[in-house]
Structures are given as structure tokens and as C-alpha cells.
Length: 468
Image (cartoon, rainbow, N blue to C red):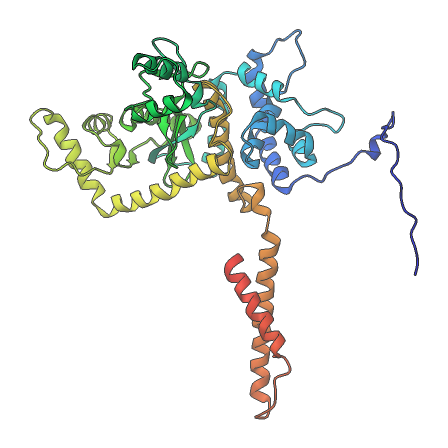
């Protein structure tokens, strides 16, 4: 039996010089290669450099991160599902395909997370919104943004703040200090941890945003999350085009603000974005219809939408018989909205709202990695969300071009193609067997259909049913 010589570990000391031809090379990820081709064809780098020139010193300064590389890194955060800037920087240093997309040379070090964070603080939120609008203009060019019918809905994002760190607004006491003071006032001179826990359980309305705040993130508000937990959170509100599924606008508000309070800001942002995205269109489309769930229904909302000429399709909660003597001006808008949502088109729009809006939330926050934020302050969070939403819209463009909206969509595509080819071969085989059976004498066995072949065929059909 032939034997091999065992290799031994060489020294860990790296060589002083490495030829360029010896450096590792990557063909690039097919998704990122095609996405870069789209960005380059429309002059993305030149566009963002012109918009960000005012934030850089023209003469001297510390080495900076190019605007095109900065926004590409944030797009990597969406496409790879990375929540933190530290994780984005690590991914750029680890992956040759990501380095190729970001346009980092092999001898060039990947940017540190502190450089990425400093660049984000340097560039204002309006410039991030301009990049978001630039992406929407690409949607308009391929017919993926109409803007006539818009759905509005909100979700909560877990804040980068812990409940145990909140303090009183009036006395600046921590929660532990506050409970200790209450225990002493009730007659317990030296309260134990069990005493404080018992006292806390008996209290009503323990944490109110009117009484408590986070010392380092005042924008974070105490809210009930979807899984039932109480946590400091932010509220993100989306406006989605119901004809194409594109995100029209994104806003960030306090988690304690009601939907009827925030819909006005999001509706205005949606109207402005639709107008800006169609700046080069001869006959631009305006926002004519707004669809929302029953959390947005109120007399004031109906009156305001009717005043600006927008048809409302807002689900109405069961309030019983209404008395219009105090607000007679709201009767006609409320009845008009009720008539529209009960119609065939209203029910169809409501079903589409649940599909398109929840899909945008799932891609942007769940698989996109932004359900929990690692930033503080609404301005910083909005900067990241605008580019995240821009990545979602770029995914629509990529799906229109190559049929896939994310790099992960390529995973499993080869297996699906092979399964489909196998089912096709099985169908051809059975067709040939049927043709031969017509010419075969009765009682003879089909050579093309053995028990093994039947088992393999059935498993292939099952695979295609579940995985194609």
C-alpha cells in the first residue's frame, strides 16, 4: 500500500514581500457583480460624491471612507442581514466577494467600524434620504414605482437601551433607588432584594414614559413588543406602494405615539418622495389613495385626508352608534370611508396591504437584521433605515433583472434546477415506456420500470413538490 509523507507545520512568520500575482482573487458574487453593474451604469459613485462633498475638507484631514464605499457597506448590512456596523466591517474584511462589491483593493485594509460610524455621523439625514430617492428613481425607470395607492403601517424596533438603566424624570433616581425610597417610606428601614421585589409586584403602572426615561437615549420609549415583552423601543412606519410593493417612505417616531398621531408625517413624507422620484417624468403620479388598518382610524384622520383630496381606505373599529352633534364635519368623510372599505375594491386593497406591508417589514427588519437597533437617537436610526429601505427597493430592481432580490436567493437554486430536470427525465422515461408497452406482448415485463426506478421516481417527485 503506498504511503504519504506527513506534513509538518511551518513557521507562522509571514513573508516580508508577496507578489501581486500570488494574492488570492475572487470572481465575485454573481448578485453583487450584477448590482454593481447597475450602480455603475447610473453613476452612483459620482452622484453620492457630489452630494457628500460638503461634508469633507477639501485641503486636509484624516483618511476618510469614500461615500460610494460607505453606502455600499450599509447595503451589505441589508443584503447580508447584519445588524451592527461592527459586524459589517468584519464582513467586509472577511469576504473577498464583499470586498469586490465595496471596491476595496486586496492590499487595502477594510474600514474599521469606528470609521463607518464616524462617516454616518458626518453625513446628514437629508443626504441619506437623497440616496433613497435616487434608488426610487431607478424603480420609476423600470416601472416598479407608481405611487397612486399607498399603504401605511408601523412596527416596533427594540432600542439599544436596557430597562434596568432608566431613571426618573423628576429626581434622576434609578429604578432600584426609587424602590428603596418607597420601601423606607413604608416602614422597611433596610429592605432586602426580596422586599423590593414584593413591593414592585404590588405597584400599579410601574413604568410610564411620563415618569421615566433612558439617560443616554431619550428617544427610546417603554413599549409592549410583539412577543409580549416590555422593552425600550422605537416605532418605524412604512408607506408601501400597493401596485408594486416598493417602499415609498420611512419615518421613525416614539414607540408611545399613537398611529393616528403619526400617520400625518408618514403621508406627507410619502407624497414628497413620490414627487421627488418622478422629477424627470412628464406626467407624474400623485398619492391619491391611502390604505391602513383600524389603528389609524379617527375622525381627525378622516377629515384631514378628505381635506387634501386623498381617498381613504382605513378599517373602522366597531364603535356602535355614532353621535355627530359635536363633530358634524367628520360625518361625511367617515361614511365615505366606510362605504369604500366595504366595497369589492376596498376588500381587495386590504388583503394586498397585509401582504405587501408585512413582506417589507419581514425583509427589512427580520431577515435584514434591523429588528433590534444598535444605534441611539431617531436621526441615527433613520439614516440606517433609509439605506435599508433603499436596499429593499434595489432588491426589487434585481428581481426584475435577474429574478432574484437577495444574494441568499441564489442558494438552493442549483438544487431546484436539478430536481426539475430529474422530474422531466422521469416523465420522458414514462412516456417512452408507455409507447413500448403498446408494442410489447401481454405478460412481459417493462425493462424500463424496475422497483428501484419506481422508488427513485417517487422520491424525486416528493423532492420537487417540497423544494421546487
